[in-house]
Length: 257
Image (cartoon, rainbow, N blue to C red):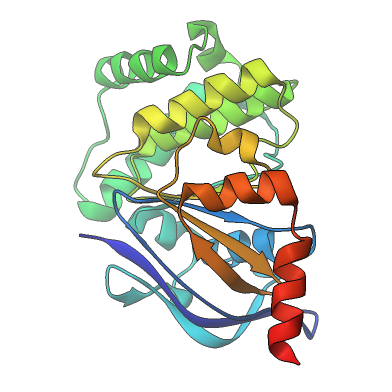
């Protein structure tokens, strides 16, 4: 069973250390949530896992299915089965959602078999419509330019549509709830929940319990000062919603004295 195993990870940006010895294992079929105040390194973790060049790993390793992915380019990590849903997806004018998704899917297929001719167009269209129905998206959406003029909710649904199409083993959702109204949040979250299962592990990065009302994690972790300082079950997220993060901060400041 594929798993993402982070071991004693240290990450710096322009010689400033942001992640300071983080360890975490996410197995296929599990849903983990990382919560924490702003500036604790949550998004840095997400970008590092996908290989963003601005982030320098100074120590530790990240294993996916037993292989150290830190030696892999971002596209290689994607083809291996890791997916990142961005907090702020970029627009690609001139490239339709359908063409983008079909190209990405064919690239993954050819990574497995260089002789693969690509998914037949009728088969792709049928599968895409099924996934769009799951996410309550109008089929006309497929003909629009990717994220060009999209609302916040449409951008996030496009990210989840990519995840549904590519079928990764591990998906990282970087503050997918950011900028969503309650209806868009519910639709996007229900789409993620429908995709989660034995073949997909999910790492959800969020500030708020409201996302976790729809995406039900088995494991919740609190990140502060570049480390995971507290872990528990779903009840931990509810406790944070009620009491905030001060108690966690005070607890670990006292432990450090």
